[in-house]
Length: 100
Image (cartoon, rainbow, N blue to C red):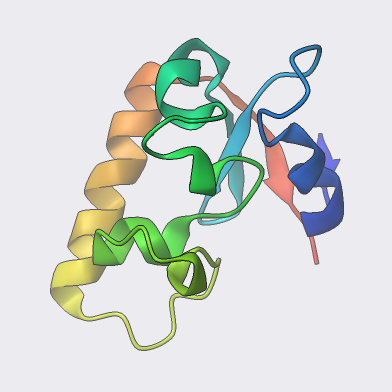
């Protein structure tokens, strides 16, 4: 499935009848099984319904870092992001991608 950023935002964990999605590098993962982390009140709830690539690379929970932009990330931050992507691939199904 293809999602715009606006469509993706509908899967942010606030509606219990919908799955919870997080995107990394444009790929959308169904993280519903991790709702204690990504659902309302979870430690990573700010990533739900968004592409969290920049924040994951920077190991940041700052709202301004929750963005698909990879611009200006260091090699170390890109390695961190790639490690996160591998963890998500191993744990959560890919359900689509974000389109502009």
